[in-house]
Image (tube, rainbow, N blue to C red; front, side, top):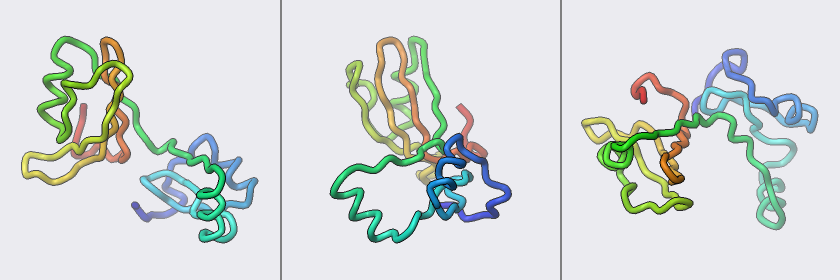
Length: 128
């Protein structure tokens, strides 16, 4: 979680909907997202017993194509990418050369390309 000034956060397309539903907003991952609506414990219980939708507009989506995409991604991520069949996915970590975590990444293999979902939009330390 990144904490910052609400005025400096990016607004997701769902901000008006969240505010209209009474959400208390906070800055998460550089975006203005709901902290809670009424009672966090009651909301967790409701989500556990029924369903909850989560605003994940803070994520960045990239797609890799080309003949070396699998070899390249398999070299820079901690999980096995080369054995993913189209339609399969996994979660990996992107590490810097010192082994420090830069991002948690979800990979979904599609025919001819590998889309990537980054859970942290801070690309100051990594550019694809």
